[in-house]
Length: 297
Image (cartoon, rainbow, N blue to C red; front, side, top):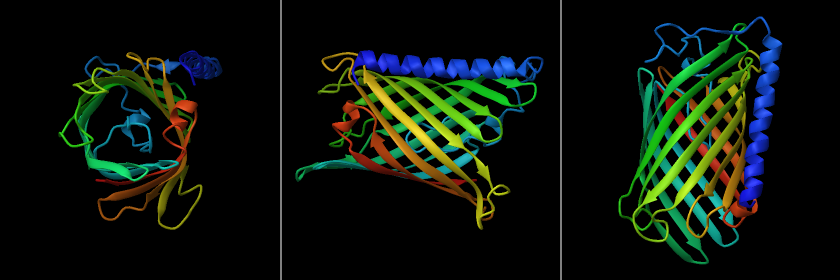
């Protein structure tokens, strides 16, 4: 997908979202959005009734997590393959909220091989945080949206796969429609610092996670609290240097299984099939498998 087609894709997606939200707003009519709680957030723009505060949004597999996490440990993996090229990333990390501020850390180990040549080592240690700024809820509760800001810093460890630092400021939106459907959107501006081929590269990053929540009451399977099918899109477009305008977009189809609690621990397992959406992604990924085990406490 070239830069022009990429812009068309983003425009169509944004237009479709705007039309959907407009239809919802017209359907509400008299049931307009209600005012946020007066004491919600630093500006009084947050509403304690929001699904953002009730662990409604699932942990994605490809897209960055944007929900409020009281406390969580996560162990994830991503395997991708394209002919003789293979890439594996295994990561461990955690998230913890302090009021409305959620902090997170992730430590990945990466291994990449191509026709017998390979490199491996500890990747950039990722440290980040996010904070909701504005929430709007329809009078009948059908529409619930949370807008916020986030930032991520990748700290290099001087391994063979980790030489340059990366800084990514972001904005996000967590949208609930009804009692089942959710959309998590995250947009970021990445800058890589340092020398080498990637030094100075700037990219626009974007991700969308679509989910449908099925509770135990609706599908009473033994040992499960809920099942959440997931469809995700995760992409980036380079903004400068020789590859400016080149886009890479991956998709995934998967499911997250939330198990019955073990004491105070709530385990959750996610598994998804990863595939390229455009030509830019297809050069590096023909298929892949993403997995995630989270322990909430």
